[in-house]
Amino acid sequence: MVSSRPSPVTITTTEACQIKFIDRENFLEMLKDSSIALNAGVELGREVHSTFIDVHDLLLARSSTEKLARLLLSWVADESGNRDVRLDHNFTHEEMAQMIGSSRETVTRLLGDMKRRELIRLEGSTLVISDRIGLQAIVS
Image (cartoon, rainbow, N blue to C red; front, side, top):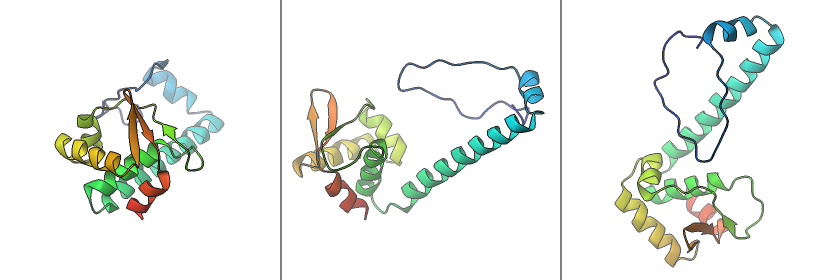
């Protein structure tokens, strides 16, 4: 909105959400209030920092195995301990491959390897991380 250009990205939500629309003129008018502008700047800074960390982590990974382990761990970062964690994300192997810059076949093979090593398991269509410490060892 601020740049007066269409966004070069599209967004797909992974669960139901509610979206509010504010037209550009009203948004820019709201930004004239210094407290709103400050809050918008703080939130933008958080988003940029979070995105930088995600990209940095993926670029630092030396292998597809490490990238996939980092991705899975990022989805359960708010959970504590090494107990079983069920992933809410229902991404396809193709979607996960796109997220880590790999192929679907590689993701399928790596998930199979992780299952054999008992780091993860499937319960129906739910992916369960059964050994977070083992996944963390891959990324260390």
